[in-house]
Length: 237
Image (cartoon, rainbow, N blue to C red; front, side, top):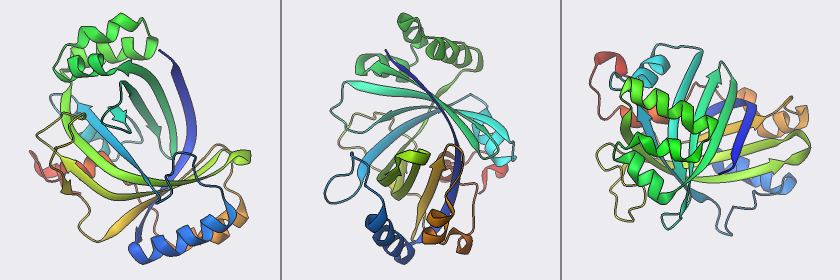
């Protein structure tokens, strides 16, 4: 299966529903939409996050560690036969994402704890995941759903996304189910604006977005989704 390694700067902001509509109208006038955007705007993203028995990834986020990793499976359609397995490495605002593709059958085996399935691909990303999962007793922790509306600018490898209506399930980890019950995660009627780029964010894009008027946040969808199933006091957001 193919590997993909992407290193980028990633900025995140909470915005109100009113701000979302204003920003998307500005972006639609100057930037092309992501080819995956359907005509009505936004496409499904469903992710299954894994963490260690002692919730190392969650603790690293909540303790403010600048260097951390998250492991997840991601799909865009419940009928898919191909699944992305991703290791998301973060160093402050720099993100390095490593991606390998696996089959639906392999994904189901890994979700059920058969980590030997990583090894059948002879893939360096999946081989490292096998070691990590086996040594630290990784297991599924939460399913996260949201719709993404994205706009792109190829020259700067710029990608601006609105992640809408974030929902989660902490008990049912079947990412291929059409009947999984999800609960809204952000209760403040807000959406998430993400800006990703390789080298620089052009000034005119910054001015159009007026991002200086928004408060930049260290938003973790994983940590947000886990807040309704807390085990320790430090898990508060």
